[in-house]
Amino acid sequence: MPEPRTDQVPNAAARRLRGFRLHLVGYFVVVGACVVVNRLFTPGFAWFVWPMVGWGPVLALHVAYVMGLFGKAGPR
Image (cartoon, rainbow, N blue to C red; front, side, top):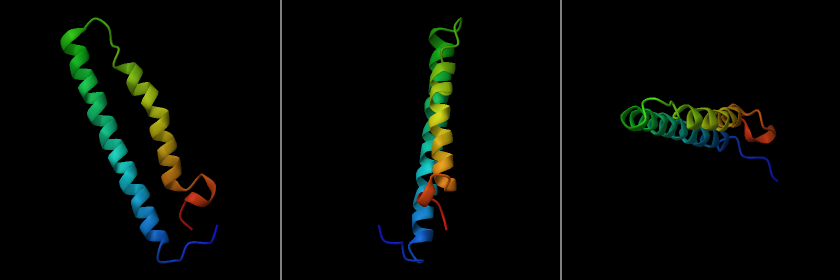
């Protein structure tokens, strides 16, 4: 695979960061909605923790990708 041009690297990094921001916003919206639904319908059991904990490692992997910890995907 050819090396990216130097003017393309900042654009790629900006796209990765924008994608991460969308992922983070989605995480908080979905987890927040799960908390609300959980407290309204089943306040005796905190099931919202399971989606929160399950999605957390995926979000952490996305952070690692954006930071460039997966080889050539990161900034140079």
